[in-house]
Length: 500
Image 1 (spheres, rainbow, N blue to C red):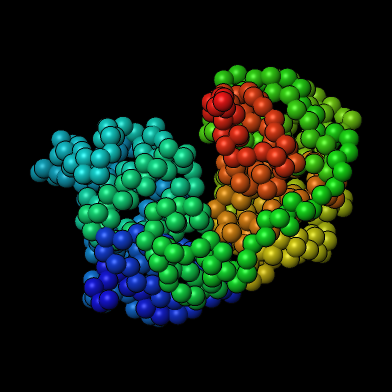
Image 2 (image 1 turned 90 degrees about the vertical axis):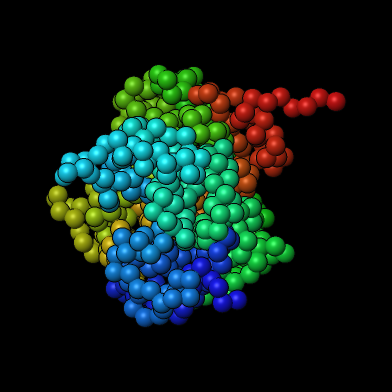
């Protein structure tokens, strides 16, 4: 086939200490949805950023509709017809939808902004993709799903022939995800070539026509999704199959409670939440977005000053809860948003890993650098962080490797109670399996682990028990060995099981 919408040939890109792309190639047909998959650090996002003008390749060639192109910046790529929908949306949140859409080319009349034309243009672009959004609404007031629609509307309005989606569903609900999929299908039907970067296999098989797999910056191969099995795709990505049975085989007999919660309540968030997690046990929390799961974990860790109720860590009651006091009691929180809450991106990997342990690594108020380095390197290697060295900048790591850093810092702190909120969000299937095994091993070592996840198969894989939340309350408990996704979903939504 020669009439590709966009083609990348033998693309190479090197960053300090890392060969991100090594003669990688991909070709995408017009009117198709083409997946880019691979482990964290395989080069997927880098290739997408090169196609959209964010990075320039060291070597190789990009062809747009058969013609060689080279972009020095994203604006040149947009003008040529290639746009990207970022995982972390890039907007001026205090400005209106219309202002954001027209920011690159503000309509004017005699040197003054033509506000009427701005609203008209924004409305036309939004209507073109069926997005019911007010052009005068402030972007920051919109949910993430509608902000994505605004970004898509801007790309299509500027004449995008190729649209790259980088982990677009990482912050969306199931309903919002389906709305996005409907939009992608509509765009493909109009002849737009969609490139879809994601770690979620269900999405790849549902929305994509074909998939190109990258490994260590090289192209492994391209296959149509029809007829491709999950195991085949996993083997292409990581060179081996994933064995979930081995995760559940890591068992230990639960001991005494290490985390006890009684009557935990926070106004307008959750109420009368009571549960316990025993030594050597993994307790999963299931629920729809807004059910209160993350808020409960944050309240336990002392991040919600309005929360009332009682919390015990072992035999000690946490009377005045704050992050510092909970850390002293041996509690660690892996938050849902690793970039904003889990890491200090201005610090390197070593500094992030050692951060919760600085008191133990200090003498007379001074950090003992060799001890810090040894501790950070041990857990850096234990988590298999893909970076050239332990002093690598955290901001430059892939999302999955940043997630490994967040996990590593709490393991280094030797926490006996771990609160894990979406611990595998945005990581590849291989890293996800590693984290699942690690969660079970942490419990087997005598820790108490609370896992919050929106992925029911993940909860069924790693948990001993699963608590379901709905509207801020715990509404049921199931044993993970005998539970099903359907039973959990019924508890989460309040739908009664069908009776004979």
